[in-house]
Image (cartoon, rainbow, N blue to C red; front, side, top):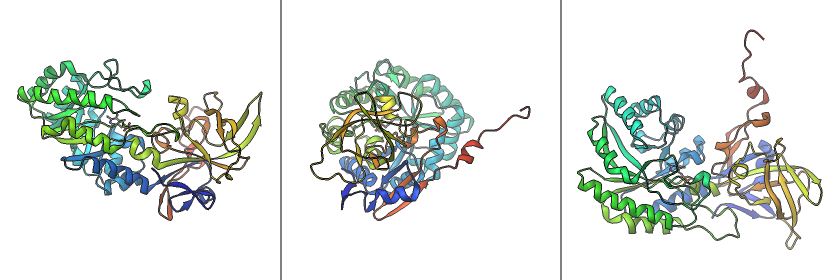
Length: 421
Ligand SMILES: *Cc1c(COP(=O)(O)O)cnc(C)c1O
């Protein structure tokens, strides 16, 4: 459920007409709903009610300071995957003891940054990383709390580019080697083993792969405890999918996921951490764009819009589907037409949808991409020298620009010309 609905014939973000925002900031732009962000955070938080737990928002999904602050004020921790994200989380006021550091390639500098600023735990993904973390912590006179990310070799049944829990993926250590790697960790004076981490992929539309993975984690908890390790925290990753196409069957709800966590792991007496990203931010954001031209081709009509693959790369990168709807509500019973919906970038991959049925729109009309809040703005670039598009946050009847569109001069002047030219 989200808070982008037609009201009096016009698409609204909460109580604000989307066309008002377009007038104020120009197109294209992203707009997020505070109510939807908070609703999704609370769905997860409530689903784990009764367990000692922390919901750590995977901020790589959408990392604007205003979004982080909104969620942090509601009680969310943060899952970060780079020094930049760590700095963003701190800048938004998130205390170090609510920040979890994930990722396969943490550098010594990033590790130092987090040890200095405070960290809830590092989710360690390899033995070489463990050695660097240990050496860095010892040199700083600190002890780093860690979980080790295990790869349970479970097929998440999602797009290949976002599956992370198969043995062929670069993530974690094979679960079969866990005892050996935990023994190494326990021998290193700069590390304190506190638990286990697992994250099998993103946009999962079925609970079965989670269940398989969590059963393996439960079993491993017993084995590692018998080996003498303290396992008091389980980080279960993120990955629950969202309905991108409204007529498709909806993925499982957070409440069902929470029940699964309780059923498979609730008896272990561990603190539970989860790291949802997409399900918190995905349906909390739209990308809004204006139709530039309607171009008739050989047997097909192209809707050429001012948003492009550099602004929203998911269709080009993951063959992702987004609902695309007119901002002015179509008349009831209007006959749908078929468009190829494309951006202006000079790549055939700059295609958002092929042969898409939707209500007819004309040049100058606004269209909204639904479910664009996660992995949207954060993955944008300035390809084709198109400045990054603005982000706007709505809260009831108010809206604010939370990242403005850079000027062309700002974009160009980031380059510097060598003296010899
Ligand atoms: C990307 C990622 C997440 C979030 O995944 P979603 O599908 O957005 O919920 C959580 N944990 C880790 C380690 C990740 O890399």
